[in-house]
Length: 286
Image (cartoon, rainbow, N blue to C red; front, side, top):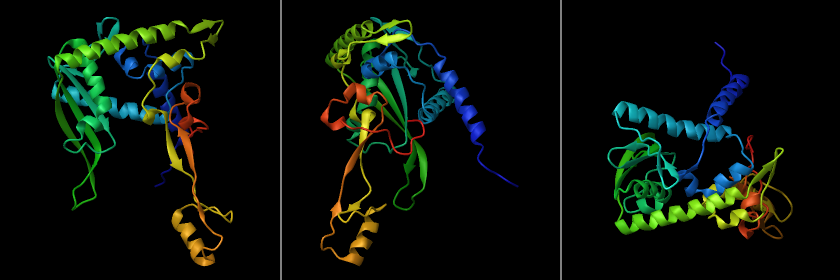
């Protein structure tokens, strides 16, 4: 028997998936747009097809969600509009249910509000639009680690009931309406003429930025000795020091900022922490 990776077939499959995903027409302002309004704004100016990684993340979440709803015979949410904002809950059981899959572990007890802050923000928006003080958050950790007796991973599910006060929902409605209006205004300034897109340079500044983890990440560069030698790892540098001695030999550490969002240079490139951001190393899609 002979087995080998078929890169041609692999690329053809990704191309089919990419075409299907991008062929779905999306109109109006959606609740998800208001979570990350700058992402919607730049996507209108310079739409980009999903990368292979993004396709796999989407398929993983969508696939688990679809099977979960079908097997559990839950009632899927349907597109609904509230004050010009379109939203679709994953499940609607008389109240919104949001399903999330993650590669990281589930939150420890007492850390849920911090660890799941982005999930809760989305659920709060659904509850505000549907006028429900109660919602459920279902979190699937696909590779949760084992206990002290085993390093094996396994998928686990945890369900959280989330209750919001009427005041919290009122504040959320006001926040959503404010973001809706600001996004509408920013989008209205984008002009397309004969295939050329023009837009005010600072129009996006009135929109809240995406969370930093969506924008980029700081990484350590390979260690370098003051003598000029570069090493793949710190242990390699330490072996070098052991052989030559520490006199006139010191470790030089440096960092680089890698882009996670392709719009980062235009969107936040003038901020000190994002200046000089580069595409991620080894990312074929970048």
